Image (cartoon, rainbow, N blue to C red; front, side):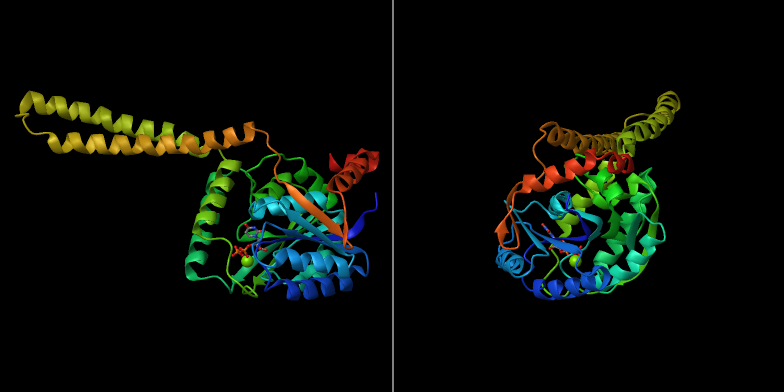
Length: 337
Ligand code: UDP
Ligand code: MG
């Protein structure tokens, strides 16, 4: 397979304002670290602005650019997955289009990889660009996830990371549609090393992660890695069972020794508490059931409209076949196992 030394994979959604600067800085960083031996995979995730036009022209000017156009907006994690599937690098840098993660860190991250790391993940020491609400909710979420999930998913870590082909092969073998890629990489194991860095402000435009998407990513993270919320029903059952037992004694005591006309307050309280708990638990079960339903349909994870390399239409399947051929090479295969 004609592999390259490094692939940088960038999901882009309405990023026309950041793209020229991203292209310039990322190309400089790749050249500095790899010379000519790199590719940049720019995935247009169904943008509504000039993003695809720009990516397409870049691919005509520069044959290091692999331009991928998805058929519609699939969301960050899936757009990223499609780029990872298509890329051919021995080492893979995952980076956002908005320059919050400085491309210049590529070289120091490669150094850490040379020292034996399989994954070098960026860990945010500072979040310059983010408003207080995002900082607080993000911090709370990472801590909640840590308590719920058996896999050790590093805190304050996004998708900005460098990994080698061995780890990527494991990742590509995971077929799930609800993807929390940073967690899936952590789950793979191998030698993962943190790389502390200060996260910059967004170069241009606005965040594409409104609260709704953040919540849905959080739900994917938790349900993707933990079944503990399902056990909530049993825990609550125990607690309320104990309370109910005490209340039976109390009621009998009341009936034996006092007048028992009143009771409306306690009755309503019990009804309210129990019905809300039941709804909560049903909701948790629903979250898992919904995901099982989506997975059971076995639909393709993403739909690629076009892939353009060096201005020329290239077939997506050719890239995948190349990758599969490399996989059946006994050496690479053993590394992937
Ligand atoms: N993105 C994408 N599809 C989407 C939303 C976002 O490909 O539906 C890309 C976006 O262009 C950016 C990256 O995902 O490169 C991260 O998004 P963003 O910077 O808006 O998230 P934040 O840094 O605010 O969490
Ligand atoms: Mg961003």
